Image 1 (tube, helix red, strand yellow):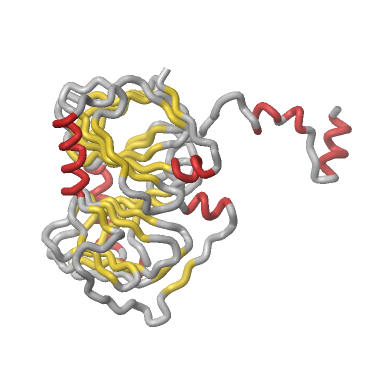
Image 2 (cartoon, one colour):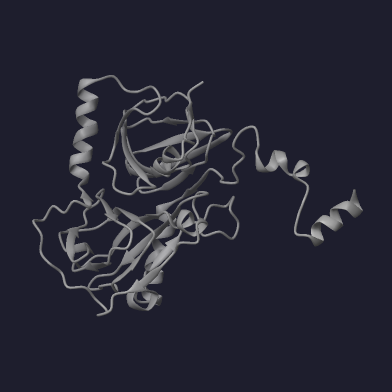
Length: 310
């Protein structure tokens, strides 16, 4: 067999029977690890980056969130990228576009002077807002306030790169011309409205035993779905698993999530991952709100998505 393998290797071939269970396992065998990024620990490093390099120099001043199970990969899950982006007072980033689609979940912003502009239309950035940058749209960010602005980026970069279809380019004029819209662009989803939706659910119905009170944002990115869930005080969720690895950001309150044998304690602004096909259950002592996103639409489009509550 050793000689046979060597002859196959010279032909750029290999025996499937030695790789079959790795290539087609009986159940998902992810390398993504349950992990948490604590905002209280990352924020000082983000502000240090703000002193070391300007937004223009960096193109985008972002600390990438790299899953410890994916050593060397700039990914938070097997299919998604995430990072924390900082725009300091008075800064405006350069305008560019790329084939990867992006979402912004605003963590820190004061007043009405922080914005993202997409194809020339500005969207204000307030804490908890969810903003979308569709594929191949020119966009930039600005901060006209006197305080730092921070948000979580989520992009489908690994999916785009899987197909070798990544393109990017700067705006030919360096920056785009901004056209004032009606103040409510279609690519911005205000936190106040999403929060009101889950609050209304809590008044009209019983909590889902797995998710509490959960709403899905309107479809905005073909490969990524975003959700908001309200977990009542004293919630003890039942185990649930699905094939879409999920990125969660604590928006309000605190709690813990049991993922297999791992218990993650989280509080406001912390970000954590739930890997594919691992049982997870949320628990709270005080009321909490979680924002999350995953590649569920991509899996559903391919007929791959599955969930299990057993």
